[in-house]
Image (cartoon, rainbow, N blue to C red):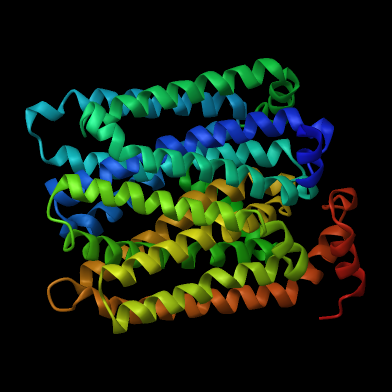
Length: 445
């Protein structure tokens, strides 16, 4: 039976071991993230205030510039499995340490929890996909990344539906001890994966030996030549920057609507748990067909779905600002981001030459993401006091329109980008599907 399932999912025997370890680790990452997210979102809105959310995004963005500068250097020196294990432990122990400060009644603590939740979600995701891109080639990633993402979605579903029951069992503040348990389990599994597949650690050391930590300034210096040389890198910058400008806007609109719809913490965390659980179920169903979406329309077309839906969501907020619009906007954008956009971008990232990847990936996930969030948060702060959140949709649609045009530009240039990589011996033809090879040598558009 397992052999038939593997054949239906197109998982080959030599991939099964690493794939199963990867999907289990990502399951723990997403389940821990969603539990911490439900806690941090509820306590921030009810104990600190939705009006401070743009400030939280701004502080988060600025702090990440420095954190990502440090992480960039670490990625060049520490094996991916060891780094992910350390990050699991740091997340769990930091949150648990702060849990013991809650009885002191420090309101600012809930701002810290909210920012940490944003940081940890990004850092764990970055380190996991950094490791996954090293473990699987481009051809494997197209088949396996949606399935690994499905494992993460399943973790989010269980964690989200379980949150209200955990609150009744251990109380709201003690969710942080549950978070500690899951992150410690994740650290243990990553270590066991390294023991089970020691060649992964050996290859990491050989590839990354001798690299030194780089500052943000040196990071810019390294990326600028790549931006001039590679159209793919330029497109990836725009396709990372523009979504992160509109994410704070839609998040603010969603949380504003939720905060005005639920008066107590208990009702709000119950809403978050059930809402995000059903959101995950929808994502999991769609993930079963993502591979066919890529095969039928290709990556560039798949990357158009998300910005187009953002336009629809912003229009809905503009003309009918309520909790039902907020639920539609959050579900649709989350589902498309999780099931189609993020896996497609991860595959696209796999096309970046290996020599560039260790610099480009942290630059995109760190500097570019933070610049986008700073811009979006700045727009929210500038609008406060004289404009209802519904009108932020107008600014959002401007940025989303440019994002959609960028996806169109990728579609027009995709064959040329692949052909250029092949001609410069920067792309392994063995890692590509037959449909892509046909597109390279047969597509004139």
